[in-house]
Amino acid sequence: MTFATTQKRQPRRARAAGQAGITLIEMLVVMTIIALFATLVGPRLLSQGDKARVTKARADIAGLKTALNMYKLDTGVFPTTEQGLKALEVAPQGLKNWQGPYLSEELVMDPWGNPYDYRFPGQRGNEPDIISYGADGVPGGEELNADIVSWKAN
Image (cartoon, rainbow, N blue to C red; front, side):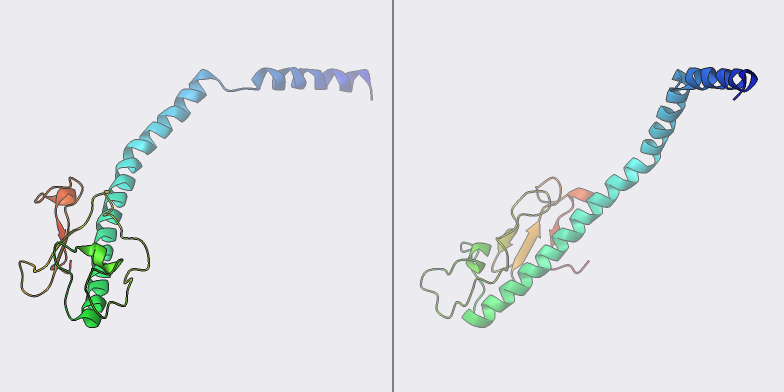
């Protein structure tokens, strides 16, 4: 290696060492891109989570209806409002032919952490009513706060 070759390489090393690191402008550009991404995509992702909660509540209610129908096949009656959904896990006193538990897992809360409301006799005939009161946990409401009920298929 000659002195001339060594001399040419030194400025490149000096230049490379001086350019190492991130400038403030580059950091600001990256932060702006991240902020734009979060602004545009974030709300869409959050709304998908809300839709998933509604879907889970509907699936839970369908599962509870199935368990209640199995309970009725064995015992001849649906649990009373007082016995509630707990009758699917633990046999009510004095009930014959109970073959439970009728749920494969522990009794669940709705996706918003509230208990499902159970009523029998229901307001719509001889079927029990199972209700999730939505995100706000109170009867009525619209959109995410709307009640999810057993007598509606949607």
